[in-house]
Image (cartoon, rainbow, N blue to C red; front, side):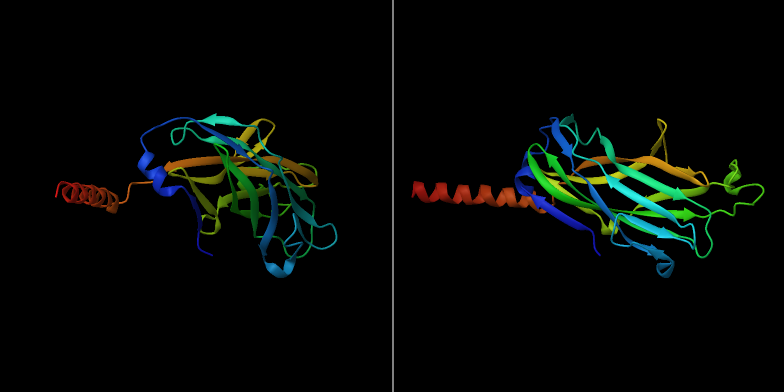
Length: 236
């Protein structure tokens, strides 16, 4: 799927660039589902907010979206708007059978900039390392608990499948900054074996200026030429 782009007021926004001011930003409410996982035949629950894998005591990923944020003034593009996207849970239990490798999380929400609402979809890829619990040392030199070695969860943004929206001459996108656990934010979430591991996914709204197209000055010259021609006609 190609990256989607939703625009509003693009030309007027381009013509108005240069008048920098803070935008009033809010996000939410947020919802999300796991749209795919691999290996596909080893994972159940695709197209819901919870996927599971493994025989007997299965492990699972669960996503719960956050409610709407409050309004915040942000000076794009110099600043970013950071917020809680939702809660990520890894129920990490000892399994038999085939483990998860990767999973795609599709997040749908509403982005509001200065009172303009736009639906926006972001897609994130989660990479999973199911460790061998009797390994010595543990993967990544982590410390085991009584149940064994922790698993590793990382994420990346699938830009090709995610939306960007254009409002007032700026392009806005939603990304992830990391897992927040006990106040710390990290790009890697090490999840303890035999435990319910919960972290907040921290989202970010980034706004970037849209370059003035090379044809726009010619468009302006064309308008000026039409004005001069009209003036000549009036004089004659």
